[in-house]
Image (cartoon, rainbow, N blue to C red; front, side, top):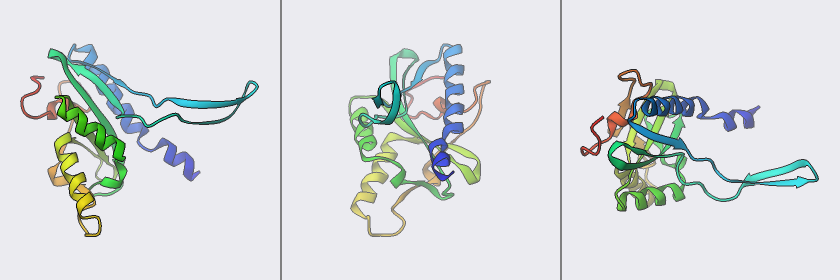
Length: 175
């Protein structure tokens, strides 16, 4: 039972994000799609005997917002009320966010904090800064998460469930 719970972790949150993406598409605001992780399937005849990811995925979602702005983001879920544990982010995802920011792509993380029943936007630069701080101070307490105080809460707006594009900073969007 435990493995099934882990496999479904974050699925409801991702479904909310997918519904938001449908709302953005229907209003002509953005085209954002979930990126699937490629899987290698091992068969014995017609029977599937095993399956595993072929490689590391980038982030969960990628797309384009009006005016040609490219975005990519990942969805994370946590039971931790003080913020997003950095151990929930994979090193290859940090590397992707760093590279995306360098070329002008808007990269970020959406975080659902279950006990608070709140969803948050964390811009890519903040993610990278806290990750780097954690890497330098791994043995010190308090450096292993992104605190909720630096996150921006995401709510429904104008009929879009989970209007996360409103949280984008620096005037990248006028949505």
